[in-house]
Length: 162
Image (cartoon, rainbow, N blue to C red; front, side, top):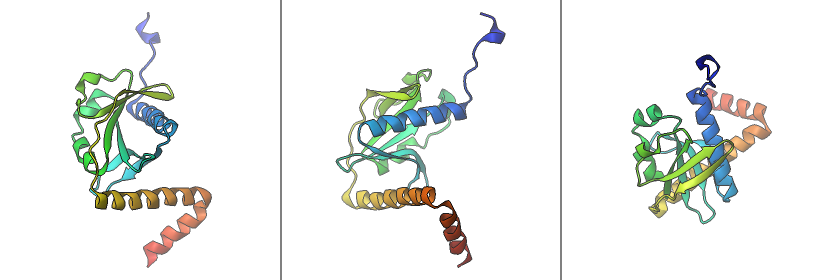
């Protein structure tokens, strides 16, 4: 095959978005309620924080390439805010880089499959309650913004003035 006609790999941002969407779909198909880009109390932001039907939380950390994983050592800090921790990657990701003590989702197009279940490590009740409240406020705020974008802009402007 002519190297000039070989298909180019999508840029990391596009790969991240595709894996994130596939992982969110994986969550939704299992009855989990995923919220993307969820800010956590420790200042980190989970790619996906999903509320599971039994009240547990799963964090899904999306990695677009080996360099993304190797340059980002923050993932252990997510464990304090979930009952299960997963990585989500695409088919081209070198899976042997990922630690065995987390779950693994692999995206193939719009879907993702579970290759390794994440071990459970239960949150303390007080932390779960605080995280649930943060999750609910964040999700409700996003829903309100979709329903009334102008109202949200006015509210934000009023909060900055006061």
